[in-house]
Image (tube, rainbow, N blue to C red):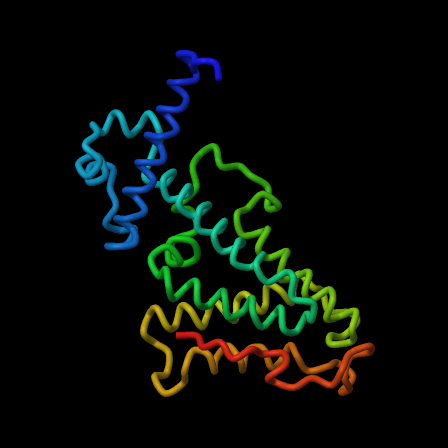
Length: 228
């Protein structure tokens, strides 16, 4: 293997430095929340000068953007693990549980992704179209399930899959947000809230089982996976 040239070494060093900054930032956010992260605090934790940090990230908001992108990538990976489930109702069930579990397992990352002010993670150069937004790929996986549910007569013909996906996402986000803010009723387990949210989507539009499917049962379409 040929020796790495000077430019390649510098590029690799820069990448490693950037990853180190993000790693320390991620730890601070998980431990203390994004409000505790400052460029000065980060510089002290990583033993860099503030000026050195600005060579990699122009602002605290740019770091937030990078951490949000990471979080969305991890969430999408958990969804992709369920795409091989053939039955769309069971797949939607698995994705819904996974979403809530992700939010409760990584509360500060979730807050940064979905509960901080909208402009926090934006920078002057972040003029991206909606298709490139970090959550768009995850939303499309949910919408794909609703396409199948509509084709199987589980939804009215006029139901727009993307709108349905956004509606379910909003519902699941509400569950996570209430739980993280300690506003959910203590006698209602999170798993029950998820199940109730899904019930509305699983009711066939014409009151019968969807064409080409076997009669379903809760145990068949909803594996017994608890959500804390």
